Length: 169
Image (cartoon, rainbow, N blue to C red):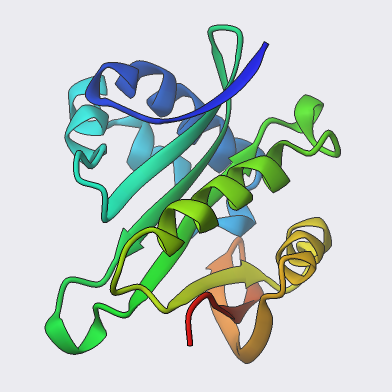
């Protein structure tokens, strides 16, 4: 049975495992490198799981297996608190095209709408990651900028598209 829940500190080992898989399978999609994250312990990952409602990681579980994640971070500075960021979205390849990403993103947006100050959601996506871009566009996200040469991996550059979704006006 599939369920979505906010990760807690006890989920650290599952979170570490899936995050490392994401960095290994899709190194061009994340700013972080696998070898830098691999040396981090489960305790390091436990410390990175937020415990407040304005910063969280949602996990999609199939039975006891963590199969998808997405992180949410609200700006803390007063003039920026109306903005929040969606980061580190990943679904295991064998579960893609089954609506898991859509469920994760929908749950994140609903939780964001429940936070009084948040008016806009922001995210970055690698230009050539068409499935992710299509998912975001299907939710109404709009592209507002492109950062050319945003990532460089093995002498190859990757552009990032910045996207936003107005959730309150």
